[in-house]
Length: 215
Image (tube, rainbow, N blue to C red; front, top):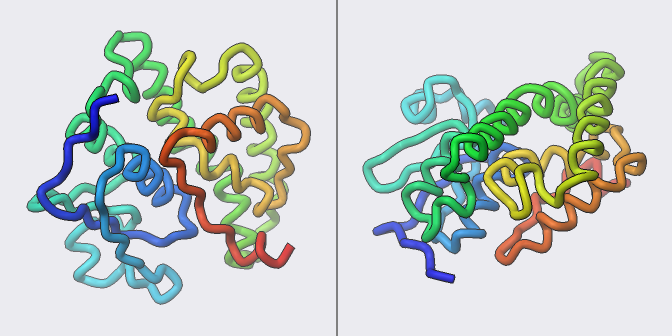
């Protein structure tokens, strides 16, 4: 396999280790073998609302990368950028045919929609002790996992026979769904898919939250 193209200097990754959005970028950086510097943003202290951070991302969200003179926010957009800029074979992670590319985009939409407002939201409720009733977001999580279970019963990865950016974008919040009180026990195909992602050369796990460590 051809080695990844390398940046002129370390890529700066602004984020927090417990964020699945940040992890998907960290994971892809590792899979590509790209050097980066992780810059921790203390979300509890609202460091993402400082003028300095808002100059990087006016929405105040992580992750943000700085690659030389370039600054880019939004985890899925960052995945696309890193792939097109540095992957030795960009088609490996983002199919070049119209239907394959559309399928990856579909799963990007799932990551920003059903995943974010289901298992990711349930985890936030638990992690930050929000007083809201988590039953609705947990219900959304199970609805998503039922669809994924059927989908993954017929293929090893979300789009075809090998991992793509779709898998990178959806992995973390599925893997850490139990931290939000959403069991993965009923979904063997989903769990097998997680194991396949974890077997990719260069895989790095997301840190376990205080909730998981206390369990």
